[in-house]
Each structure stands twice: as C-alpha cells, then as structure tokens.
Length: 106
Image (cartoon, rainbow, N blue to C red; front, side, top):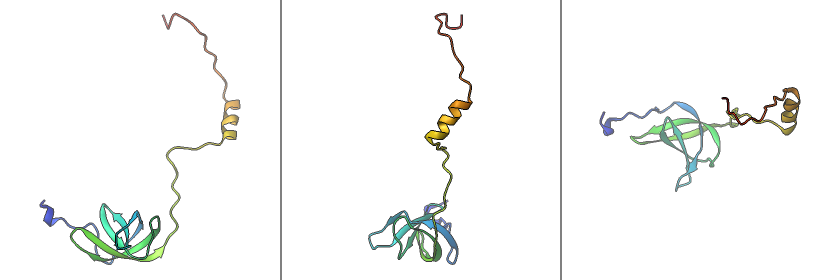
C-alpha cells in the first residue's frame, strides 16, 4: 500500500473518548485515536474528553469537545497491599523452616 493512499482510521462525525496528551504550538490539545493525531481546541493537557471529529485530512484530524469526562479508574496490573494486610497474611501462612546443609541435594 502506498503511503499516499492510506486511509485515516477516523471519519468526520464520529465520536471518541480521548485523553489530551499534549498541547500544540497554537494552544490546541493533541490526542490520538488508533495512532491518528487529532487537534482539539479549548482543552488542557491531561483532560479526558468526548470529542466529535469535525475534519479529517491526510495525516491529522480536527475535533471539538462534546463533553468533559472523568478519567476512568483502571486497576493496576501490579496489586498494591497495605502494611497491615501484609502483616495479617504473614500471621496466617505457616512458616516453613529449611535446614542448612552442605550436601546441596546430594
């Protein structure tokens, strides 16, 4: 597929929930949808908004804010545990004692 014939992954009129990752030189927020850059006016870096695509060019698109949203809370893949929880688990689990030997499994 020739680089000039790539089709944008978004179409005018579609809506998406996006995170504003940066602010461009002219003050518009920059977001990405499927790797495609969108310019969104009247937002700040870190905003999470619902946008409607207004214009799509070959390499970038433009969108307007439909609604400001609360950033979704995502569960971390790394579980966190409080010190008290850790202590209570240590009390519940039996401690296995290992004998120090020099034979190393012989």
